Image 1: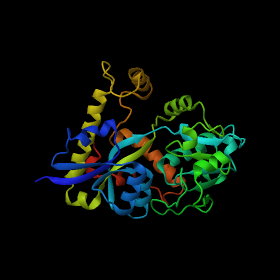
Image 2: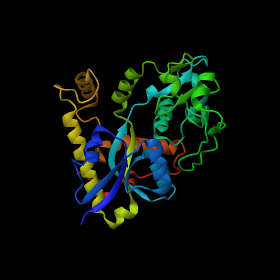
Image 3: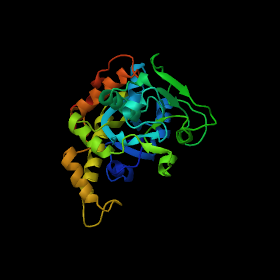
Length: 328
């Protein structure tokens, strides 16, 4: 008898086979629920609503550190991204480089957002700007509204924060100069609309991101996949079978992506992009598995502790189902 399980996840080439049912975990019928991270992470963090879900790596660490064991991860990482390209500054704030951020007001979606963890770590370790040297402003992103964290987070006393009024949004505050900079996972409207009041902190972000990878050997991980612990404890085999299905789905996508006769996606120079990326990142830019990602993950665990998202150092292996530690 098969289990019928919900899987909430973004819509990616690497998960398409799970979504369309061409790949199924052994012993499981999947109800794939496409969902954007902004909604999914909040619902899963608060209510553990889905049996299996894409999930924020930083929020998983925070929950686990606080003794919340409702979720256990498998070493699948559907979202990775370099983030130099997603720090924007007010063009009249006198910010010409990272050093000029010191003492400024920076907006962010959430302090615990994984993208922001990587961005703050990059600013601190590569440019000497510690999180305590700026003021962090949180609130609505593009449309005024009420702000609330996905789960409560108590920050160290030296971190200065402000929640903006409900009648304001970070996008307009950046344009108007009420905040000096903004970081996040998605370009705000002012960036998409090419506001003259807004510019990139790193206009040469591509070169910096390539240099970052070559120096650190890290392609930053944003999201992992979690399983409800009560389900996992009742059926431990679910973790390995779901992990294997994600691996197979990614392999299917990787096989389709470079087909040159008819382009797989709407990028005119797709094959050239693939060649360039593989030359820099190696044959598998999106590796799954614990060992293949240990360096990146352990570095990240150091960052969330350093930034106050977790209160004590974490053991990496404890976050992931033991049945998946050795891979497929």
